[in-house]
Image (cartoon, rainbow, N blue to C red):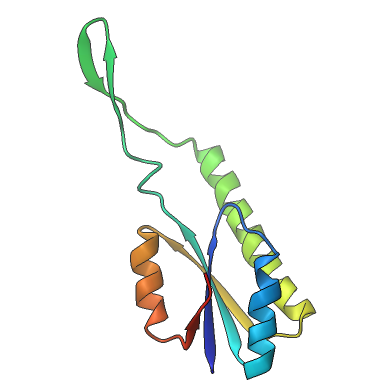
Length: 117
């Protein structure tokens, strides 16, 4: 095997997922590819509210400081993934995918030999 795909939650990365993935990668001398997925569509869907007998649509505005903090957390998780792979002596690559997580994993898995969920 050449490429093993490991999708991970971009915001809540768990380093323990590397234990099994790195074991398999070492056996096959494969490269681990971490795909950090965030489904922003769930965060940005406005809901219909009711106030005083009238219905209105809630507008969702994301605070720039929250966005900056979120991106910093995601970058830290990608660095932690790469460092974890380096400690386990496994070749690795990681990148961030925003949007439809399932579609991104399916597209990425076309070129992978193994998908570890």
